[in-house]
Image (cartoon, rainbow, N blue to C red; front, side, top):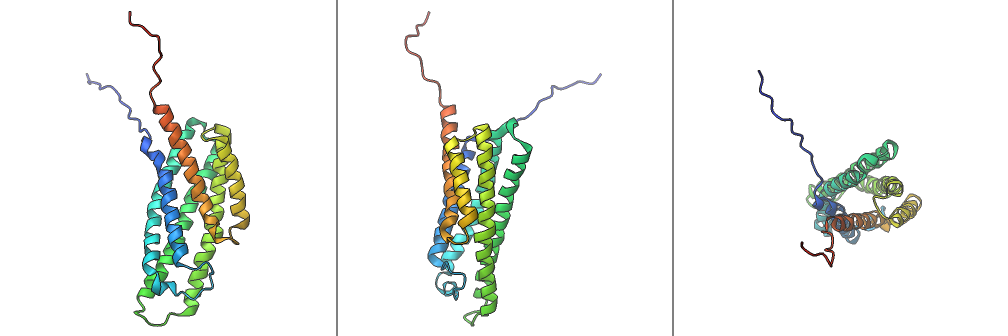
Length: 229
């Protein structure tokens, strides 16, 4: 006769600290963007003088972005955990897919910029091929200001729509997400500072989620007037 053992099922629970992932993503991405804006001119037709004078600053910014991407993956996990069984397949697919495509396009852009740094460092002071530089510089500018920002706007739209129907975030944040995503879709190519809109919105959303988690985990207040019998 076989001796049976009781079946046990392990449940993974999202750690409360995971709610900080969105805040970490926002801060790292904003710092990296500000470093790049201080070192690299916004005009994609610039001559590349920053490759000699500010290469260290650009390298620091590019090295921060992979850590921001890891935090963004955790942020997506936090949102899906809050959805639970109320996750709609259509909007969840757009939400999850746009988040992954955002990371993919962001990493490709960073890889191109990193390739420019490595390629220039191998020249040892020799003159740089202007045609090669202009192509790489234009590719980075196009990827960031068209593809990365546009897919970030799609992520904001899908997340805002899910928030409206499931109440995983305040309604005003969902409405703000619609407004800001519209600005990104229409004006990102004309304003190089529009990229800060996305991490700032993620920061507000993460702050709201973190505050809600802390409020739910707080012990209930003791009631006065209770007596021990």
